[in-house]
Length: 174
Image 1 (cartoon, one colour):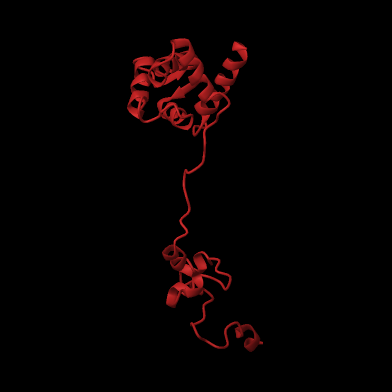
Image 2 (spheres, one colour):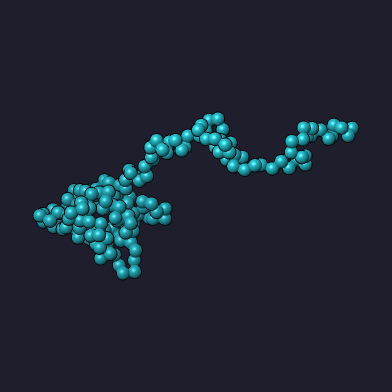
């Protein structure tokens, strides 16, 4: 049973280790991802364990000139935090409890960026109510015209603007 728990724990470690970093291999975890793991898995409870505690434990466990922790160091860090998080329990029980919080979890993407649906914002982004030069920047469906809507495109045909017989020179010469 212990081997199964460790693999689930290691899997969670790897998921968090590669989160947000395209070059990460999943063997080492940065402090930012360590904090995210502690928040997402509810190790930080605001009373016994705070974000400061998490950062202090990370700094204590990692090497002096290193910025990441390995899986072994990760387990040491959890051992430190489990004593604080589950005070009434024995060290082994507390460690098992903290493993249960983490196992099978991955980095959450909920509440990262919310879209605002206030009437003010919807009024400002409703292109049908635009007037003047701003109206020219969007077609009838409200889709932007891009560069054609932002700039006066120069006619390089050689004719004076507004000339009615543009393009008829070749017909007259014959």
